[in-house]
Length: 112
Length: 117
Image (cartoon, rainbow over all chains, first blue to last red; front, side, top):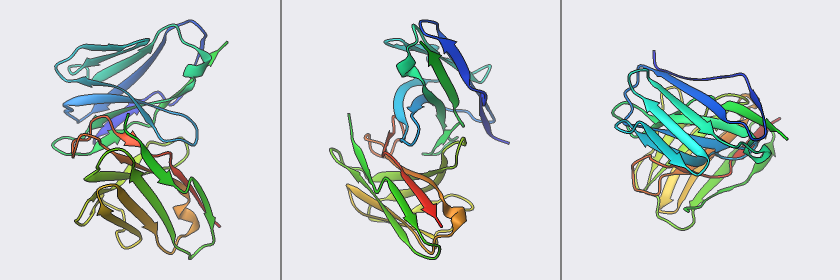
């Protein structure tokens, strides 16, 4: 069956450290993968998109990697700040379709 | 960036009533809009794809007669939950891709928390 898996347990880190979140998928062949941020009671906000032919993408303090062999994406936030505390969702395009399928997200807490 | 406005943000209704949720693209035309539902600590589940000027495409298991979708213009899509029941209580979110019907870089509304008593 098709699955997108993100750590269901919250990630707690100290301010200034690098947060690393994992997204694994099964039985999908996405042309690209996306990461979104969601705050409680709000809609997700787009952060980064990485295509299947790209190994790594950066945007300010954010870095995403995409390994199509391992079927895994890693999302890094460097020099983390308390304001980075949120739920981070990975999402990918459904095989052959115009649908975006989301993982359940990982809750990140950054302590001052 | 593109803005998607969703109203209302929160609604409480009695069982058996109907609730309409509006989703507007404010600074771009959205030929396609997506409606999602999210239960606490769960992923966004795609309910349907709304297409301007044509019928919506519903995901498997979503009752089209219960969740009525209308996409009457290039900037407005509505979702009506008919005869709502407590099990319909959830967070409903719309989204639109600013780049036509590709679903890259979706812009989301702020969501509607529906509570059915």
